[in-house]
Length: 255
Image (tube, rainbow, N blue to C red):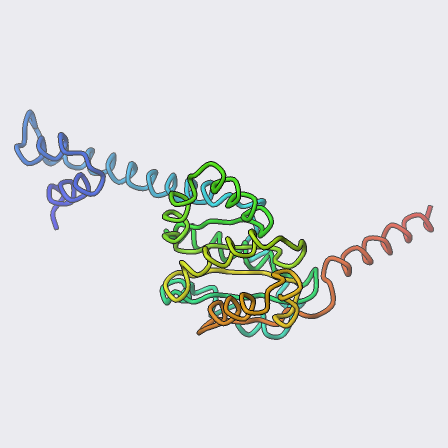
């Protein structure tokens, strides 16, 4: 493809019809070859800048509480299932397949870090991501219902390529909250991917939903063809705290 055609194609992609027409008609080009060279470099830079801005906008729109990268994980400290599954999850094939990822286990083992890291990877790869803690999402859903904007939120919620719901089980919720969460997760079941982190095993989910039938239905839909990771193990945060206390104590002793 020559430079002229490259410029025309990039103008189409960037939606710059006036420049495209000027190039096609060769208006006021005293030296077309030199003009094409300069214009091509300008357009390539604009294309690159737009890609960067798009990634930044997707990360901002996802509303992550903090930016966590998978590369920052201490892989050796992760539970065995996480070590085994991480390369597969990092490929993001589960998003293309509409599969869920369920991370359950004790606090401090990397559940939220993995969820946030996968969310960041998805944003950088061009996917639309939504992040919320479960209590925060339920509050949002109740507000939308009271303001009669729930349907509008539903339409957006079911179209996200990836929804990340953190901290299921830390706070119990009422029947209305349980039903709203169930209905919205059901919108995505089998079509779009959801990542859920929980400190509770599936057997204990009934404690927060207070409804055995609803709990069984939700668990069945979420786990169907999903990646379920047992994240039980020693707390990495606790280990870091113990090391910090030891270092501080050693410094005090030396002084």
